[in-house]
Amino acid sequence: MDGVLIIDKPTGPTSHDVVARARRALRETRIGHTGTLDPLATGVLPLVIGRATRLASFLSSGDKGYEGLVRLGSATASYDAAERLAAGEPPPPPPDVSRADIEEVLEAFRGTYLQAPPPYSAKKIGGIAAHRLARQNTPVQPVPVTVTVLDLALLGLEDGLARLRVTATAGFYVRSLAHDLGARLGCGAHLEALRRTRAGPFTLEEAVPLEIVEAEGTGAERRLIPLDALLPHLPAVRLNERGSRRASHGNAVALEDFESPDQGVAMAIGTPHVRLTSASGTLLGIASPAPGWVLRPTIVLV
Image (cartoon, rainbow, N blue to C red; front, top):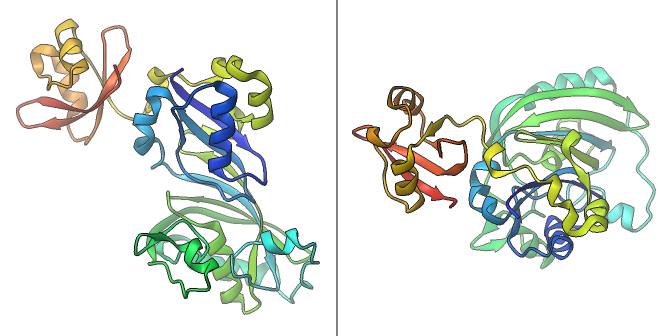
């Protein structure tokens, strides 16, 4: 059982919980995810299964797309509404903030800038997750990281809830955006709800609700995106029989190992990683170009 299964995560469980439930349903221990979603969040959560777990670092680096509801009027320690909703507390009264006010402030959050992760996050401080320190009442200030917001739009404003669409690079926190937006507006804000619509090339249209996977059990294997269809943005170099044999043993391959040397070399120029495939298109692994038109496997899948 090898490939990627795209889960439409429900609100409530952690990403680790989803992985555990998928392991039980599929009877497969080699399962991981390509980027966490908070318990409150829903949407696209790609699971890497079997040999696809070796590709997790490549699959987790893509841009992410979200739609979120930002509650204006108060800030929270976690930057979201989890504790308020769990306690059944009513939302704060809507502040006197207009669409024009929000549009003006949003401009500061477009493009590339330094973003401080939330105190309640998985970011490590001295080797300890920030959320563990925060729950021990230890002062927490995760180091800001560089993020890039490719798209940020205000879709609506009603009763103190601003609906935002966001596309950003990996590592971006929509919770931090909500908190910082409230600070800029001077009214405070936190994230009320979040739905991830895209993670790299994977979209909601391909996602399967977790309860369906649990109901289908091992039959959900048919929903996997196979290894050969992954990482289509990386150039592919087809290997002949000798090259396939060498690559499968982790050995470097050169011109004489390419099915079509001229095409293989051209595709390998100017890129840090290429896919190595057999003549029939089976994905054998990932390689990095080295001097002398040599490709050195960094990940072997066979």
